[in-house]
Image 1 (tube, rainbow, N blue to C red):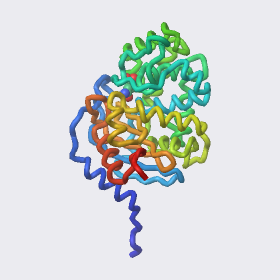
Image 2 (image 1 turned 120 degrees about the vertical axis):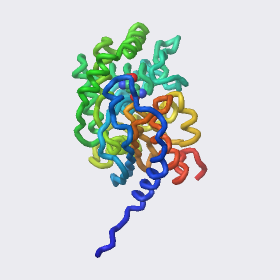
Image 3 (image 1 turned 180 degrees about the horizontal axis):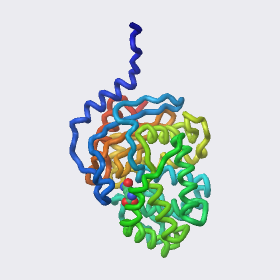
Image 4 (image 1 turned 60 degrees about the horizontal axis):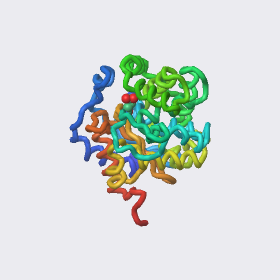
Length: 312
Ligand code: GLN
């Protein structure tokens, strides 16, 4: 029989899965029943190179909601639509050191501290082209699909629940409205944001999206330019400083890769010029980051010497 050609990267990813599989600590997100009900056990990792080669292991086709992993990609779309100066009139780029749903506004300017926490992300959604929530969401959806290189459905049950229970996010939006940094009425911004969080993705999608940042803005599978090189670099920069909420400093020290987590259990991580990584495991730590996702990226960074700031 012909010898089966083993993909060495896949074998390496499988060994990372084996290493973290016993770590069953943490809890699935429970702020809405739809997320509290998800199967806590799936575990997957995908890696997409800047040449468009896909390596994957474990549950990389299981769908989950993108949640906050959407934030850097919408920030990138806003940068391309409006330019850095205009975006920065509405949002800062400093780590907040606070949880994702914190009341975060700079006193002098009324800007949320950064676009990776909810207040800043809602402002980014409000800046997308269009007047209605549908139009803004459509621009977001089309953009996210270009990052992923395929059509993505919305999980309508998660969306209805986010919309029904999202008063804290509405409150954050009202604060930015009164401070003059929100770009639309509150209900338009938050509805677009809730739909954005409810887009259904796989670990492989998150890897492709990160790989599109790693190439400097070209989706390596469809070869389509999604955003400018500047927007890709700026987005990776803000992911490095702010992507893991109040765990961002620790993350930069231990893992050293721009990354963004979401309460659906996904993480997207970028090694610029090399590849994107997507991980999926729904149990979260106290900060809302996937326990096994963090463990996988820590293990990969150490084992394959991925830390961006290491001496080469
Ligand atoms: N839908 C969630 C929220 O807005 C997303 C938060 C997250 O993934 N950290 O609260």
